[in-house]
Length: 312
Ligand code: SER
Image 1: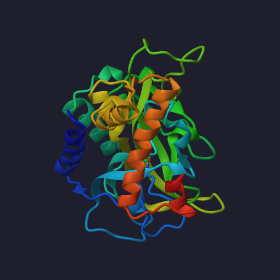
Image 2 (image 1 turned 45 degrees about the vertical axis):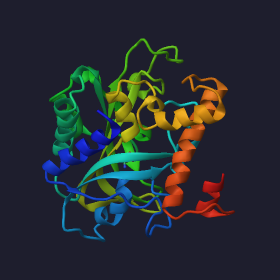
Image 3 (image 1 turned 90 degrees about the vertical axis):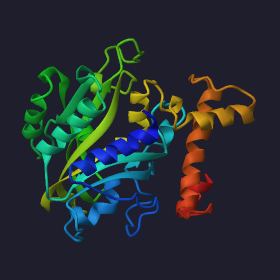
């Protein structure tokens, strides 16, 4: 499938399951001084989760433009050396505002990955929250995953991996990630690969299902949301790499035209290696996309704030 077909397939699947397909919001957050750039699909729904805004739908699906270059979610330093990180990327997401919760979110994710996209079930792993800082282990999510996965393929991790927050304050909750196993043949720098918790290329995180339950206050207290809700996010670039069977996001149809043009202009063929010229080519490809979308959303190079990030 092409990346365009995958994006459409994701949105159509959730539309068929009662979700309203909502347009991506701008990379410049509409009304949120806590955010430099839109960094997740849930940003445009923050006030809906908090109960301050209402929509005429309780289920939504989006393909959201995101930038992760500052604050809590910052991938800037990974861009170039990594084959799967970007400053700008598209996040596919489905959302429930007080409608379905963990059971249905896990069921839908499984159906799309294995039923519609036919990913081999034996390559999929899940993670759930192990319990930390007064928030208990996610027994419920663990139980739902056990319906489709053996216990050996369900990992329990702490708050770094399995408790998602938008920022220092605001909506947050335990989460469950889905990882795709690419194979033991890929290198891992650790003495013993840590599996889904490892940063090597053997396992790639494809989808994060957040079970939104709390509003974190400035004093760190967790106040329950008006209704338990769902916020999920899957990187279009990563799922495209998996579906197109390429190790690198940069070898997919999303990046190849850019890298071909960069190769032509540089007079040097991009080779996909960790060598400095290929790392630089990935940086240029990534940053060219980021700059284009930032400018399209009204940001101009300047000495301060958002414009300074673009200028850099
Ligand atoms: N908000 C969650 C994330 O960004 C799920 O979309 O990972």
